[in-house]
Amino acid sequence: AQTIHQWPVAEIKAVGSPLSLGCTIKGKSSPNLYWYWQATGGTLQQLFYSITVGQVESVVQLNLSASRPKDDQFILSTEKLLLSHSGFYLCAWSGTGEQYFGPGTRLTVL
Amino acid sequence: QQQVRQSPQSLTVWEGGTTVLTCSYEDSTFNYFPWYQQFPGEGPALLISILSVSDKKEDGRFTTFFNKREKKLSLHIIDSQPGDSATYFCAPNTNTGKLTFGDGTVLTVKP
Image (tube, rainbow over all chains, first blue to last red; front, side):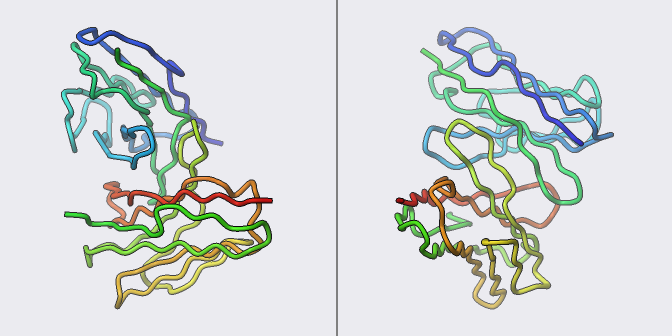
């Protein structure tokens, strides 16, 4: 069975500080991977997707970047956080059409 | 431009009742229609999905209906339970990985 793990579970960071969020998928070879952002009480917005190692496509940037250093790993980062980056970050993988989401990382920027 | 609309925004039903959520979209190229269920503090979970070649799919207490002509779909929950209390999102797409989520419907089922 496939499992998706996100780290950290939650972060509290200062405006202007760097950020790195991670996602690992196990049990699925060469998955398509996605990053989403969700404001509190809001909908999900797709940020990035990757179909293979080293390739990342931006959907909505929001002053963030993403990388895929390994087949099973997807990283979301920024060098300078903004207040507007606060929210819930979700990683997802897709099989044959459906997307499956991880548990998410709650980010609070102060 | 709002591509995907969900209604109602929130809904309260009594335990044992029937819940009906609706979703409408504009892009006629959408051909895959998943519904996601999200509990507070958790990632969304795929609940049920339907392809545009079908007009109905059932899974236990959950049924989704699809109307291609009207570009609408609905999610019906029979015998609603307090454990069904969650936010429900539709996310119609063209099966290429680009999901467009609706704003969601917050469902509360009261015992």
